[in-house]
Length: 94
Image (cartoon, rainbow, N blue to C red):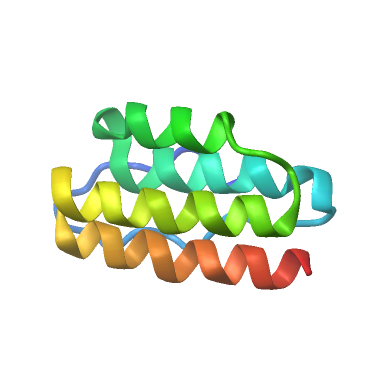
C-alpha cells in the first residue's frame, strides 16, 4: 500500500515511487524506493541514505552518490530507475 513491498513476478517494472506527504518523510520514501528496486542488493545504498542529512541538498547529494554506487556495483538499469524516481521524490518534497 505504501510502496515498500512489491510482489515478485519475474521482470515486472518497479511500481511508482512511494508518495511523499511531508519533508520529514522524504528520507523514508527514498529508503523505501531503494529497498523496492534493489531488494537484498540494496544494503549499502539504504545505509548511505539513512546516514545522510535531512536537508534537500544533503538528500540530493546522497541520491547522486547512491546512483553511482548502484551503477557501478549492482546494475546500470536499476541505477537509472532509482535515480529517476528518487529525483521525482525530491521534487515533490520541495
